[in-house]
Amino acid sequence: MDGQGETRVAPAPGVDRRRVLNWFLGTSFGALVGSVLYPVMRYVTPPRLAEANTDQVEAGTVNDVEFREKAFKIVRFGAEPVIVVRGADELFVAYSATCTHLDCIVGFQKEENRLWCNCHGGAYDLQGRNVAGPPPKPLTPYKVNLVEKGSDPATIVVSKA
Ligand code: FES
Image (cartoon, rainbow, N blue to C red; front, side):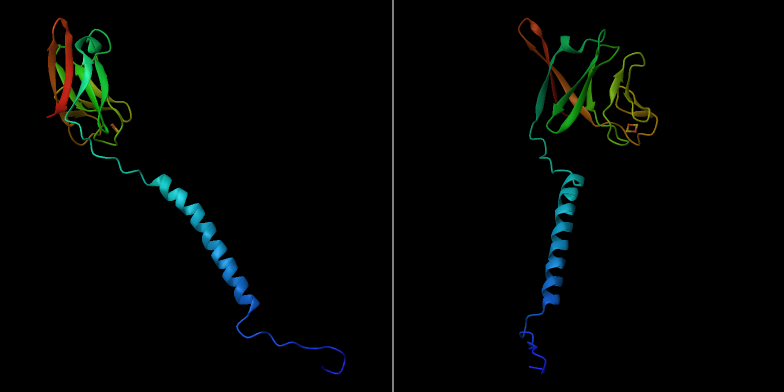
């Protein structure tokens, strides 16, 4: 008592409201930052893809890749896109369809008889060599076998070179 009817109470030892409030705000801010950063990091970091366990894939029949029509087909070889092309000489070739410049998917320009990357104008000949534009190296080759099955059109089988 201080003589005017008031009673002062000493703070309890170990209990400091300011420290509790700071701890609460600090952990809340940490949780907020974590809840924002974690999804961003998951989005930015590409998922690990399993290496292709396949030795070969079928890319349809020879009738599916007619030079007179589209003349190429893109198939999945595990996680890798592979382009199968029937050139003007009617021979089949297959390469990784991933451009060696910045990983766009290449197509086939029938008129020029070459593989073409639309992203920055990169070009490859039918031996897979980079012949124009920014690609720094050739495409990875794959092997093509034509498997006869009776009287049906031959099946295109792509395997690692
Ligand atoms: S990604 Fe193919 S030329 Fe740039």
